Image (cartoon, rainbow, N blue to C red; front, side):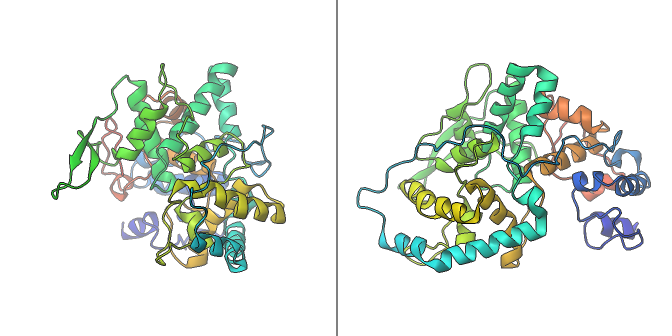
Amino acid sequence: MDYLRQVFSGQMAASGLPQNYYDPSRSFAQNALDPAALQQAQGIAMGVGPGAMIGKGTAAPLFDLSNLAQRPDVPQVPIERMPPPAKGVPDWMRAQIENPATADQYKQVLQKGREVAGDTNALGWWNTFPLRDRYIGEMGGAAGDAAWRSDMNLLSATSPRHAFPPNIRQASYFGNTIAEGRPLPELVWQPNSTGSGGNWVPTTSAPPGYANFPLHIQNIQNLLEPGGTLSNAYPLSNPKPASMAQNLVGNWSVPTIDVRDLRAMGLTSKGGKALQSVDPASLYGYIETNFHQPLARELGLDPAQMQSSTWVGVPEYFGGADRSGTGSALSTLEDSIRRTAAARGLTPEQTLVRGWMRKEFPLLSTVPLGMLLGQGVDANQGSIQ
């Protein structure tokens, strides 16, 4: 039992298993690509209870991941940005963007990402067209394409301050809320105790394992259209999720500049603190035009491919941990689907269709050790953290 706890908590490798078989440090989706690995994973899981079967029902991957690094055949177009600040780009920003050391560090982080994840995951991170094929197969051409685009917008709306696994969980949670006709949590203004300023706060709490982040709720409210679909009509003052939505539907000509991307560049504020976001948003277009686009041309990559490679490379380069892992967006989604399938006693195929596409229940992003040890889970709540 102690051995199982260590294996499933990732504290030790399954050293008793043959080389290149089941690896508990890999995602379920990555293990599922190796039939021998999946067979071992199922054998271990069945030893602690049938409810923990990994990939129960099928070892077949849910998506064709063979050509992810090939850019989808869709128009590659710029998107509108705010004009630069009225006073011009500040000297502290211009100096960093024009400093060759900034590009040198970025290229080193990028190379780390390609080395640790492989180009399928690093350069093909954004490719969700195999998922689009599944939507169309389930719903038909026009309806499937529309549902896929709406869900990619939902992922972008719930992305701020999230690694990608909890991003998937949050998008699925709010998608289920909308699909069931329940209202989004209400936001109310809560002044600070000093009387100056305040914050928007939700009036209701999310189920355990999920979160009612005000920014996510506001993003969804801004994008929600009649019928429960979401547009990509972000205001110009919110460029990062607007770019992410474009990347997810195949427009890789624009970068998603977030905190990890800024860390890869090593950008700091005027006071020397590491930048957490592009603030003010009027600098986003300047960084995109004067850093990402010319560097991408130099490297022969799309800006989105370049940026996603640094996403993967940041923890390796800086020696830290990152909850997003090294898989592509689709392999990470499959990981969440397989974990949810194991918890609910469904097949991954059923969970993809019913949970993710039809939104009958929200996905889980992780499964606690207690469930793997046969202690069970409330399948009705779907709230594993």
